[in-house]
Length: 189
Image (cartoon, rainbow, N blue to C red):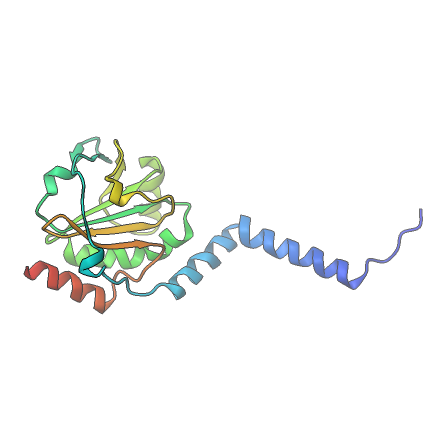
């Protein structure tokens, strides 16, 4: 057999493929994606009044990590912050520190529902590892149509009049001054 020395182009291609594999399938890749998501996360904006929708139903059942079933109906008339997330989702991981700060400051004024498709065991292990204390839930029934998304993170803010005033898919800076001002304005109503 006559083996030839690999050409520079082939070596570059192999190195590029190895780099992509490292980014896509390793913890280093997750770290890079999380940091990039944090860098690109901006303060979310509320929907103009003409684009706000009323929730069609409050008959959405959730279960908390203690096994207690709750209904969205229990929170009608309150401001509700709903975040769909997963432990394997880099943009979800990226926004968690900001969500923790927001939750710590507003937990007694606003209802927070962090809804995951992960097992509670996996989600709780993630929260412990990341030093987060958030109320997590799993969906028992389908959420209202106005909150259906095939992408996570997906976050919705419902006002006291049952309007979806914010709908954000993707990572956001939830702890920004401008978003906190929006929450404070809603709380004054």
